[in-house]
Length: 103
Image (cartoon, rainbow, N blue to C red; front, side, top):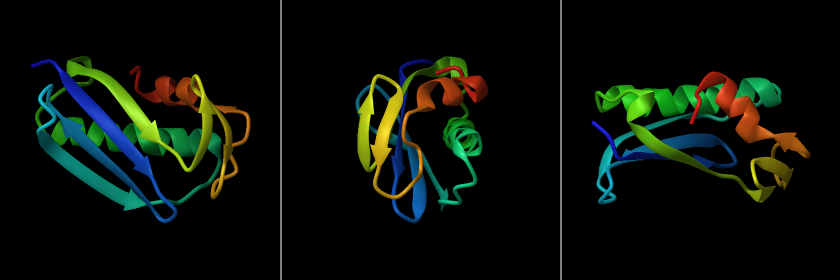
């Protein structure tokens, strides 16, 4: 399997993830409450959610092309500049995410 894409939406109260194929067809979805306990734990929660949708579709991390994370704020590269609802200012979220899931 290959050609999968993961999208993660960080909302005010929930985290939602979806796995699509290269045509945009939704293959799996998951959600969990937002429970912010620090930047590293938050990044681990996001990576776990990504792994959950991969597993639900019978895919492995090596099968995914990329992950996109939508946050309510501004991001430059993988660094969160600010958010409206989570204290992540000046956090390299991409690096923290890759510690758990290298995508």
